[in-house]
Image (tube, rainbow, N blue to C red; front, side, top):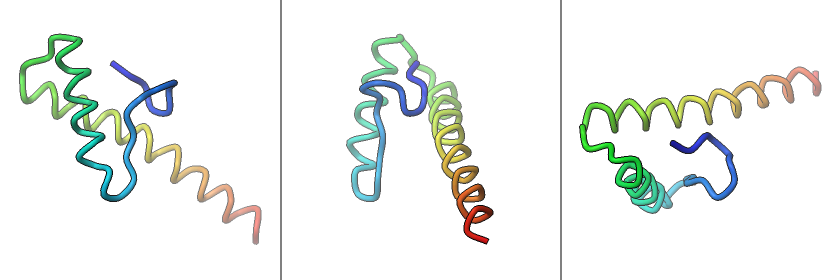
Length: 66
């Protein structure tokens, strides 16, 4: 499965969520992941890693501007 911010990985911003989910669904097919529960777990894992890094960067930015 792709890792957040990896080369040519699916991503989303605002209304591009549909494109993101279609790209992720293609990854599921490529990796033969058919179970809906497993798909949901991968989506959550992917987005948590991505946003956790974004939040950490925001906190570091906020600290540096204080």
